[in-house]
Length: 376
Ligand code: SF4
Image (cartoon, rainbow, N blue to C red):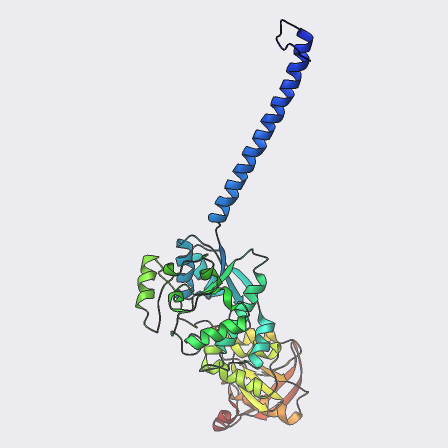
C-alpha cells in the first residue's frame, strides 16, 4: 500500500509516518550513540591498557638506596608506594623522615611477632652480629606480597644493590631472598636489575630492562651522583637503625637466646641499661642514667624492681623465668649497690613490685673485678 508522506497530501498519515520516522531516527541515533560510545569505550580501554600506570611497592628502609629506587621508578612513570616493616629491632622513625624528604607518604606495617619467630632460627643464619639479613629481607618481601591485593600493587621493588653488602646482597643472596619471599618473580631491583635475571615485570614489558640501572659492588659514587640529581641532602647509613647490627645489643640478645628467654617482654629491656647475668634463670638490668631508669621502670610490669633504700642511685630490674632465690636477689642487690656512688660499702637495698618496694636486704657492694664476670 502506498502512503503519502507529504504533509499536504494527508496530514494524519504524515503525522503517523513522521512519528514512525521520528522513532526510527531516534532508534538509529541511539544505535549510533551506543556504537560511538562503545568504540570510545573500546579506545579508552585500549588506551588504558596501553597507558596503565603500574603500581609497585617499594620496600623502604629510609637508606639512600631505597630513596633512589623510589625516585628512579617514579621518574619512569610508575606509581610507587613505599612501605616500611617495623619490628622489635627497627622502628620507622628514620624511614618516616626519609619519606618526607622525598615527599612520599609511608605505609608502616608491624611484623614484630613474625620477625621474632624468624630470628630464633633463620635459615640463612646471621651476619656479623645477630642480623639475619637474608631471612629478614625474605620475610619483608613475603609480607609485602600479602598486602599487594589490598593496595592494588603489580610488583615489588627494593633498593638492594648487587654485591654491596656482604651478607644479603651477593648474587646468590639476592636469589635466596627471592626464594624465601615466595614471590621471586615479582621482584625488581631498579638499581641493579640490568645485571640480574629477568622477572615477570621485565618479561611482560611492564618494566623495560633498558630503563633499569647496573650499579654493583660497594663503591657508592653512582648513588652519590643520583643523590645529587634528586637533591637528597640527608640519608642514613645502610643498616643504620637496626639494633641487630649493633655488637653490644647482639651480645645481650644472644644471651637471651642461649637462656631460652627470647620473649618480647625480655627483648624490650635490651635497649636500656647495663645487663648482668646472675644465673641461667635470672639477670639484672641497671640503669646508666635517668633516661634509662625511667625507661626501665616504665617497662616493668610484673618484674621485681630494686633501689638503694637510703641513697639516690640507679634502678635495677630483674628479668627472670622463675621466682629468684634469696641468694640470687642478694647478688643482684650487691651489683646494683656498686653503681650507687653515694652509698657506703654496705647498705640496704629495697625491692619488690614497681612502687611497692616493701622488702629489704642488706648487702655489700660487689667487688669491682667481679662485676666483669656478670656483665653481658
Ligand atoms: S640490617 Fe636489620 S633490618 Fe636490615 S635486613 Fe638486616 S636484619 Fe633486617
